[in-house]
Amino acid sequence: MMTMRRNKSSSNHMLQCICLILLSMMPTVQAFQFMKNLKMPTHDPYAEQVKEKFGDKKLVVLTGTSSGLGRKTARALLQTGEYHVVGAVRDLDKMEAVAEVDGFDMDSFTPIQCELNSFDSVRNFCQQVEEFRINKPIDRLICNAGVYQPTLDYAKWSADNHEQTMQINFLSHFLMVSLLMNSMLDSPDARVIMVGSVTGNDNTVGGGGVYPIADLHELDGFKAGFNNPVAMADGYGFIGAKAYKDSKLCLMMMSNFLHTKYHKLTGISFSSMYPGCIAESPLFREKREWFRTYFPIFMKFITGGFVGEYEAGQRLFQVAHDPRCSKSGVYWSWNGGPREGRGAEALEKGGQISGGGGAGGGWDSIFENDQSRKVLDVDTAMDLFYTSNSITGAEWPDLKQVVSPCPTLKVIGAVTQGMVKREELKRMREMGRPGIEEGKPLKVSKVKKAVIVTDRVASFTLRNTVGRVARFLGRRLLGRVPEQALTGSYHEKSEQEQEEPILEERALTDLKKNQELLEEEILSQLSDEPVVDTEDEALFEEIYEKDVSNAAPGNSTYSERPMTTA
Image (cartoon, rainbow, N blue to C red; front, side, top):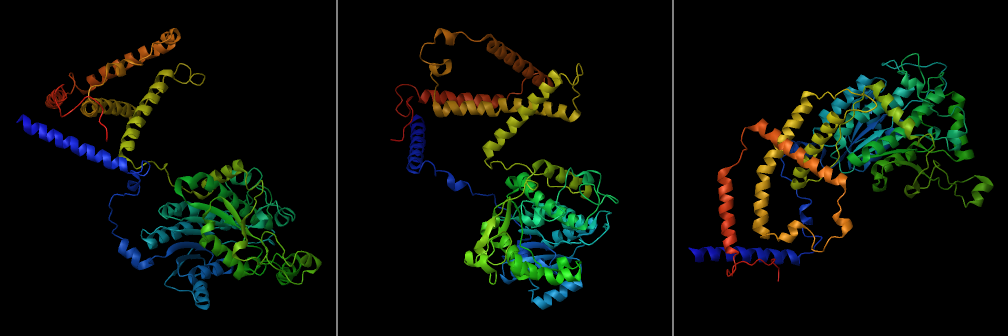
């Protein structure tokens, strides 16, 4: 019997040595790296349905696809064969005609009615998108649609009793992002793209040199609820052109704010862009006829800032498609390319006229443009976020910080979190709020009391089960711990080291007393006697005694010396 036991012990010892040798042969840093991508097997009941519907294409939601910039962008996305585009449009009949004229692949294009003049319509659109996508994540959300009404002498009101330009251009897109952001969390390359404007960036000639200037001031209009008759974000009198510029400023500010608030938590990229001045766009349909005739000529041959719809569509497509544009917190622009007939200036620069927004330059002329002080104003951006929430009724995802998937760390984290909550509640209950509520005891809710009791029970259970097992395993694997390791350092202490601070001694004494009181309270709540598994205790002691006997002097199987791999 003794021989069999020794043979079994020898084989276990041999197996341990082999495992240690194999581990020592592996690179130290890489030893367990192969486990980092391991995931629990899951079953997706919709996988086949999603595959059949979308294939390997990315899912894009694009507003304003029936005309102008949105139309050209949708066409560019579809021509790659890599995207399924959901178009948010006001007029489905018009969209059907445009899709036929432009040759849209209707197997990869799905128009859904959305009136940005109504929050209910936006919510209904997002609900239809949720049903349509099944469980496929949204990869791109492009907030493009907009209106420009510079000639209006008075404000027009939306279905929600808000000024139209601000609601269509900004508030409805703000609400849409909040509703669809959850559906983007599982995308490996999710992007939210806001179409801004040079007019919202007052550090440029176009934005800061032409009155009226975009300026939200203190957001008094939004803070007042932004309901009729309040027509402007700053609360002052209505100017149609300023309403448009303010809405673009809001989009660019919100892109930066969402980047700061959500990018690291979600991985979603938030950016804005300026495609250039699309002088022939339907955006100017409400301008006077002479303006619509001569403005494109002026932009083409005088300023060089003209950009056609096709080129602008390519630029917005690039921000959605180019891997470089996955960077978050950026305002994208393009340097203009060659010009002809521009006179001495063009000759001096070799025909190259550079500047944010000019036509030409190609795919590689994209750059990260500077943003104005107003766009980068964090305090105003925060006010804009919360007032917009109040106006639209938006509710954003309740996101939590990504934590390690390691099971051990999860257990330790859970225990630690419980202890922290208990100690914090204890501090709040015993110390009160000096200077705020003098002499008033803290009111502890039933939920908090339950947390305290539950944590105490859990702590007791862990200490009397897991703790005992851990102590036994420690003895089993490490052998007897030398007395010196338990009592402290080998070198003699100096006089200064031997003099323990009085405060530290008191703290340790109080800690010990508190621990004893805590254990007494736990025992009183559980039962009159400690819950001890006597059978486990007997088993552990029996195994430990056998382990000690095997480790006794003269036994060749084990040694009190540390195990080595060589």
